[in-house]
Length: 131
Image 1 (cartoon, one colour):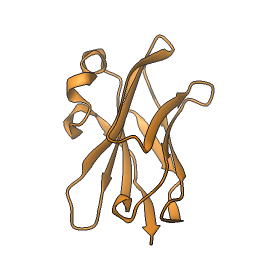
Image 2 (image 1 turned 30 degrees about the horizontal axis):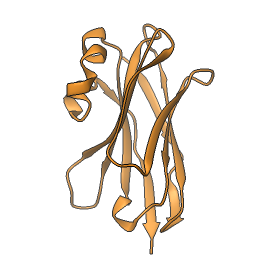
Image 3 (image 1 turned 180 degrees about the vertical axis):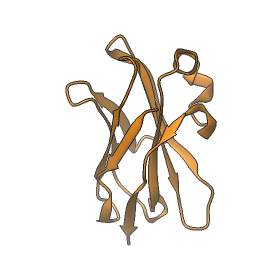
Image 4 (image 1 turned 60 degrees about the horizontal axis):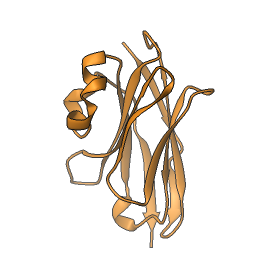
């Protein structure tokens, strides 16, 4: 089981930026995938971004829009989600999920936005964007 710690949320004004971090632990190997999902008040959880690393290099990455960038800091073993030009509709609880199954990693291109693709989840971090 992979343990996940998400951080970086807070209150930010519209147009501002925030960087979220997801630090996994308990990985069986250096290959893994991380997905960021968010849940707005009264809404279902939706995919935001996903990234996979294989043999120490990025294998796949996906963002839902050009304002968000996901990346891996290999030295810190942390996945970052940089969110720029935030809008009030970006408000929500952001969660990170992880999988270290090779079959999931190699097929992440078609699985990235499915909650079921990720085996473990951390506690969410709240991002509130004010007008």
